[in-house]
Image (tube, rainbow, N blue to C red):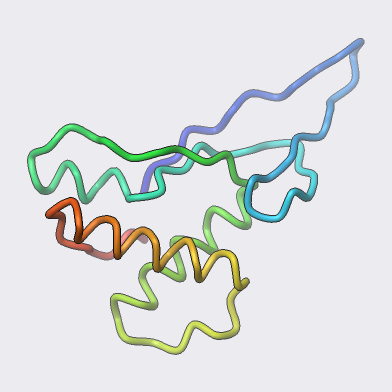
Length: 105
């Protein structure tokens, strides 16, 4: 799993909250997330060609948990609905790009 931590936004000596792209809630820190996991591109020997989303750390890890849950055939219904939807997108779009979905955590 990758995901660069984006820097703090500081204005006038004050840490500003940033918006998570998944649920638009506030977080002091965001992670840059590849919609189709970067590791799948590397495993295929291809350059990474995936859109990015800025997610709070909790949503970021929840999306990866959903991806891994789907790959393992687990019930992921307890996870956030948008995280589940993004996991389905990752797997569907990854396969369409000729990639083999693999565990991310």
